[in-house]
Image 1: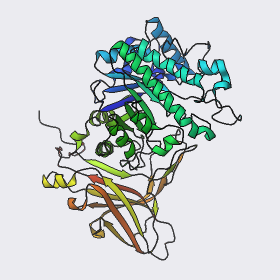
Image 2: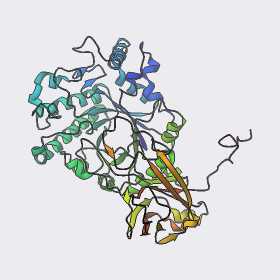
Image 3: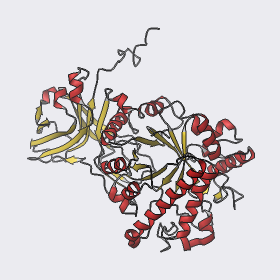
Image 4: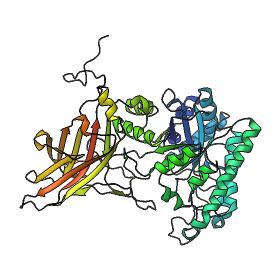
Length: 526
């Protein structure tokens, strides 16, 4: 298969199974494929069920509905009915998706979750744990969240996963397989992680061998994709030596999943993955978060996606791996799915480069993202932040295709009577040239309940925005340094001021319709 430019993930559950009202029809069964046809998506990845309880008619794994007759949960009942109706139609979710995608020249990978931690005999417990109990799990104290997690030092676990991979590649003829290491990511007991790395390397190599044997028999090459953390140390911290997998040829594609809740348009800590993949003749992708800390929107704006796409292309990634976009898709989602596939076509389109505040994840074993915000302002000191711009600013200036970029600084509890100097790349910005907005009761969009961490910036505060339209020559491709020099504070203002938002809006001479009155733009002449 050709190298995918844009990968999209459908978990088969939240964005298909539970949305389907019985009775099932073939049209409803084909929704996951239909909704991405005609976009820039050229590889659709789909989950296979609840971890190791599956939505297809498996011969080796437990299919939803087995060992359960009455459904207490409405959504689970609907999914069961989808699976039941598909079986009566002589097919299932995975089989029809593979066939229909192939008919429409769309590549399709089932996604196998390597880890789950559902207790024995529960609804989402697979056959391996059902039959062997704690013998194949971590075990431990009753309050240990990983008590029922699979122990990957146990060969029975390897054989169980390999059996499902064979079913997908051999019986179902899937184009490839995704190994999802990001669902409940724990594979060895804490004191066994270092010794577990060669065990996991051997397991992934066996998956490669299995795919090669099937591919040779079927006369095709079968790619293997691994979805892992985008930071090297986070992977090694749970026993995943991704660089060895790439160097040994065990995987063809690797996806770096960013574990944070907020999406950065700058990723300073993922370059190693692109380098390792490119050196091995493989491809690497980034799966970004789906939210931003921004007063205007909770989901990233299209111009933020453009900035991220430009950033990772410069770093050597093959593209983005998206998923969980608001459903059902409307014009905004389809614009993202169209444009994200071709960052080179967006090189002279408007982009917004943004810095996000620090955040925690609870519980979490991952490294804290190296974020610079928020920065408290201290009298007599200079607060400094850097923001990396991927655009070829100099080339756009030479071609006379760039408009004046906009620098936007957001401050919480700013005191307008302070003596403060602002600079970008060493050049002082006149306060008189700034457009200043004072909002005394600003509230960020509400964070969804599923985010269990903490964002170290206020959800509501008094805010000042300072905006400058810059000479394009002041902005450069690469690192841009922004300084806020706090010379003297107003003595009676004893509150803490902070910088908690930075945005560089890179603007081009796009073909834009003039603004109308009461309508967004003036309609074109027919």
